[in-house]
Amino acid sequence: MSGTAGRPAVLVLNTGSSSIKAGVFEAGKGDRPILSALAERLGTAEAHCSLRDPDGSKLDAPQPPEDSKFTDTKFTHEAMLAWLIPLLRQRSGVELVAAGHRIVHGGAHYSRAVAIDDSVVAALNQLIPMARTHQPYGLAAVEAVRKRWPELPQVACFDTAFHATISHLNRMVALSRPIIDKGVRRYGFHGLSYAWIASHLPDILGARAKGRVIVAHLGNGASLCGLIGCESRATSMGFSTLEGLMMGERPGTLDPGIVLFLLEELGMNLEEVRHLLFKESGLKGVSGLSNDMRTLLASESPFAKEAVALYIHRAVREIGAVAAEIGGLDALIFTAGIGEHAAPIRAGIVEGCSWLGAELDPAANAADATLISPPGAKVTAYVIPTNEEAVIARETRAALDLNP
Ligand code: ADP
Image (cartoon, rainbow, N blue to C red; front, side, top):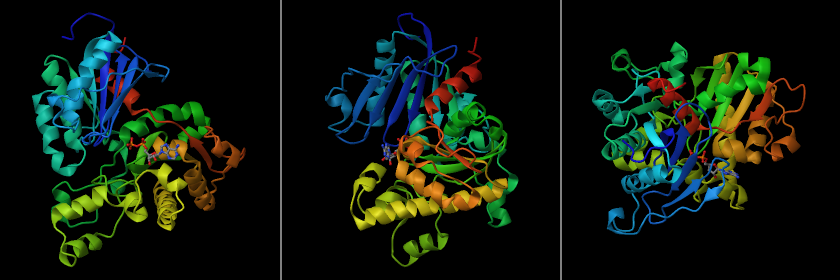
């Protein structure tokens, strides 16, 4: 099915709205990819792609040809996938036996990864209205693989699935019964990232892993997960990817009265409001400068400083809410781009959580160490890098029984 024989491997595709993270993993086991790729700034003329070996060293990668296949000067997801998928197989010399995908929404039905067939594709397409800005990209990747290798088994790994264990009340929304009965509820996202962190908590936290832990996934999108005994009990993101923390381009929790005001009084139409909420708010909106935390931390602009201060304030507020839901806090974990690399943000959040007993070791924090609290802290803070692609590989193997 994949051409020349090589060692059996799983292709992993984590397809976002402007990027594709891809990896080729051994079919049997292992969290380190044989080869990985990162394609960024898709949909713009600056789209590019880099390849890395298992140690994370950059490899020479041919760039997508600027010919007609790539629709004018814009490298679409489709064009990038059509170019990247065969390239990964050729460069790694493997025989692909499966492909695993990040699919943002699994709805109420899928609480674990599932082998993809026509009925699964149909069900996942039906969830597009619940996650218009994310769901189509993962499904497009499924289609791209299917086009190239129709017989290759594929698996959908869901961002929602890890939150199947949230409490009944965390899941509920306080709308009217007829709306609740239509299935309007909270789901939670970033579950692949939380699954990775949860699998490492016993090694890193020891006995505290059994306790009350909040993981802050602070990437471009951001959310919190409150865990007890390594299982999700509460999360800050709800029905859509808009709720909870302030994010790169999304506002986080917002009075719905504001949305009505935008529509009724400011005369904005539905598409304009959607664009504002998903693309023009959060760090980007408040700073008027950028959604990139590095840019904001380096900026002297008062609006950039205000955006950073609000980001921290909102995070502290939401951590308080999730801590209340899980009955207190033993450990606070930072992960994803900002969580792993932005020491001033971690410092602000840990200081803001001092009322819960969180303490910071400034030197350890500045060094991005794993443990960033002093010995004896009531609430210990940690930095744990996430690895969604490795979780997709694990879940794909498990769904297809590929493990030796
Ligand atoms: P995505 O949700 O797109 O996967 P990432 O997890 O890569 O996002 O996180 C992107 C965010 O991480 C951006 O705001 C970026 O500025 C921030 N980031 C990455 N590296 C650093 C750094 N060294 N210092 C501060 N912020 C960083």
